[in-house]
Length: 288
Ligand code: ADP
Image 1: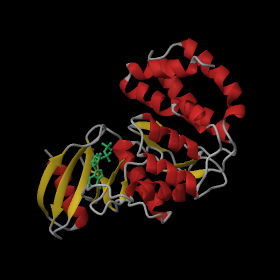
Image 2: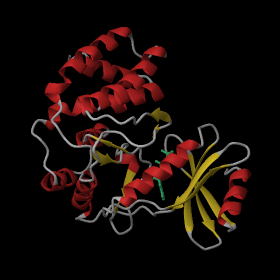
Image 3: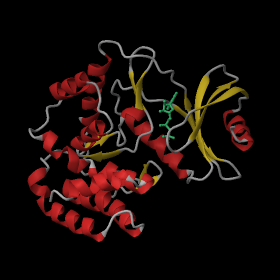
Image 4: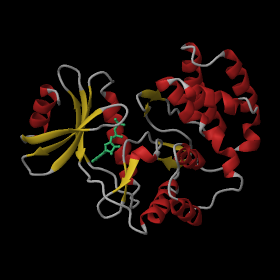
């Protein structure tokens, strides 16, 4: 059930009435519904009774940044974000119906992601911090990718995991050994605009077969970080990868580096869900 305070706030902010609403299965973090307003259009509503409402304002900023890159990736347009008087954060965006891939969808998607990654900045980071899932993601600017990777990606999550006892001090020692080797592992790449949370649950093809991405955790980072994550939970279609590489070739040896980049999402999953994710982190770290 959508809380009444959310419905009335939406009506107040949009100046429209809610004609109908159906709760739909949300992601792993928020609750979600399809809502039709008096303009006759369907909207996708997400809300959360316990998370920081800022989560949605930075999600809106992230979607706006992705849209400003003017690739052909479809990005849902946000109508409004806000917080009710009883502290429920919400985000109202364009509802996009999921469709099916056509024969060109996956390769178009690969080229469009490459186009996104061809948007560069001078430094790694972002002008604001955001969230990865519901965990804070720090984006302090760094000139150097390795400093960014260690200080903004590894260390905060590793500390959270050791403080909560999900990982032991032996893992910290292994990470420290790994840090020493990163300069021989990561190829030099300029900071690229990344979606930041691109796995198979955060894209679909719309009714025209157009790749649609949502729920980002944007920053300017090493583009291999994004590609590594696409491989983590099942991978994307092979045409996606071949089209990406044709448009924006990768340095050789990427598949040997993948696991190191994926320490970040695996640490995040360890902190969010525990269990086998911690063992995967240990398994990768033990190689150093
Ligand atoms: P969460 O923040 O809880 O992870 P998501 O933003 O990932 O939620 O959305 C959950 C699911 O809702 C997605 O997996 C997708 O199937 C669907 N979805 C996301 N955005 C839209 C949208 N704009 N229109 C229609 N469905 C959407």
